[in-house]
Length: 417
Ligand code: GAL
Image 1 (cartoon, protein in one colour):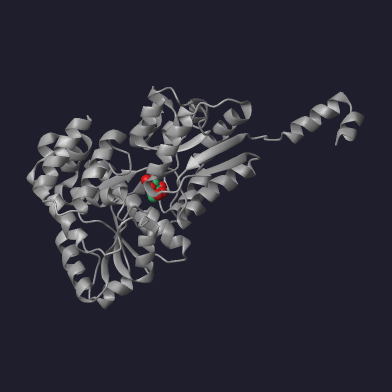
Image 2 (tube, rainbow, N blue to C red; image 1 turned 180 degrees about the vertical axis):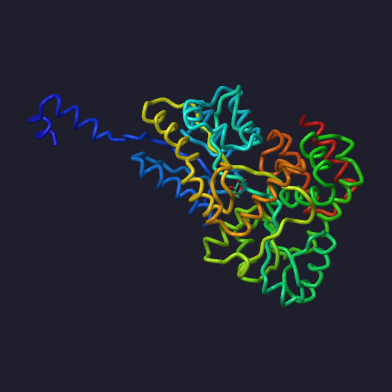
């Protein structure tokens, strides 16, 4: 190599160097928690698209559904003065990191591509800090979904997906009698909290959900409605198999795929799992909103940490543009189970579950029944969310009464604020 360089003219060397270092479209190290089958497929689409633009992608996956392990790893990296270029981050977490001055904005890209015109205002607000975009959303996930195995339901003589909690409980009793596990679940705090928030919406409605889980209103937290919500959660606990503790969410989804369990309550990343396994919606698995009116919103987005080096800065801009491009939003969400964050992407290629999600989202915006997910970090600061997760998991794994749970929850939330 040295020999050739020696023979080249100055202009030739310059040309060689620029081709040799050739991250024409920059470099990104991406920290995320997408490691299940469906998730890995979806993030693989982002990697391929970035590489197709000439960029260099360094993958930093931190396993652990719901992202709690990833957030711990992120903090350690930032404290060590070595943040990743791009980080999967959500909701108030975006504001918290921006507040600490840790994020670069991508407003130039957002203005050039007119993000304001194509994002639902509720989502755009979450992505901005001080009026500038500091995050780019990839999707809209719905958390309040019930997944079902049609064969298991048929075996137990259940004709349709339940639409009330009473119907759910009656169906679950039939499944128990038929020797089928009614509810596949993984006993991890974020999964317990996912059940909890879907139940709170179903039992109390959107206004109650907002008062209790977003505004942290003490009267709502200690109310009869909260006690009733814990009662239903206790019911659900009785419909699990004995090995639920610590199980990953995607393994619970696999139990529904195999017909070992009939239902799972989980956001539509579970659909990504069914699809990655070649299952067909409507035939191999069913989707229906969990009982109650409303829509629990979760959205994944990427933020861009303050890093040095032109290649990294360039990589951030390219990644932001790519994430919000209509073509990518379609491909990614077809794999992830979610729907595009952009409102102008046609859903022709999407299945009926996705179309239902989109219709219900519009209806929820209109009726003011759209609520942000507490369990998935869209609603409240991490510290307060942590109190919810601890208490709900404690309730789930003990014989604590619903009354005691409501009182303890209200106290813990008050202390954390
Ligand atoms: C959610 C995230 C989803 C999904 C899920 C399980 O918080 O928004 O994209 O990956 O965790 O890991």
